[in-house]
Image 1: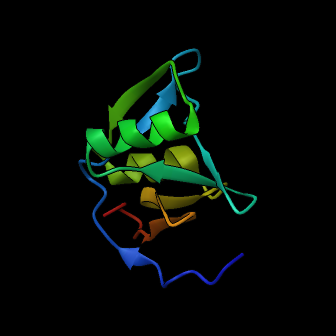
Image 2: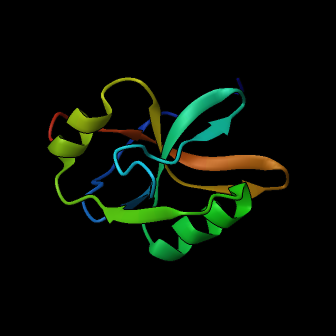
Length: 103
């Protein structure tokens, strides 16, 4: 994997994520360089553009209202990336560093 920038502490309250319609507890994950990532987005427009790019359909958008609950629900299974996008063939994103409150 290419070198990642240092994780940034950001508040994820108000960010949105995509969950599959057929299983609302299953998030839409993305693969970046053979690793699974949990994408979150600062706007619905960014989420929808990303879902279109990866061909995801039949998903529900959920807003993060409680950072602690969000962290508890995903555990340590995947890394969290904010606002991933493609630029010149590379995926760019903010590597999210959260405190125990998800803020």
